Image 1 (cartoon, rainbow, N blue to C red):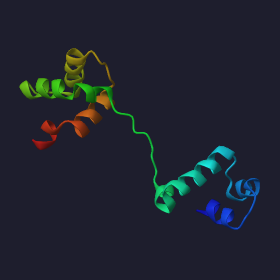
Image 2: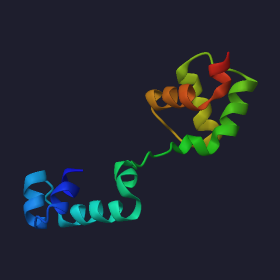
Image 3: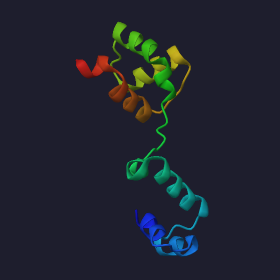
Length: 108
């Protein structure tokens, strides 16, 4: 927003970059372009990329395998997921996936 203010005051881009600690001309240009495309609303949008787990591709298969015979431990769950999908993940990654992605375990 500060960048736009200085731009509206007719300040040169180099000075705007120094004052706002934006050291890339491409970043300044992106801010101006976003403002032109959609005003302040567009400028306020943050679009961070959230990588999706490879296990999410096999959600249905994992859910079916776990529903059929629930694993007693996290290690067993990791082993069975690797067996079904061929994807090997750490205990932490398997635990996180099971907590966030599988409705079966959360509804019990």
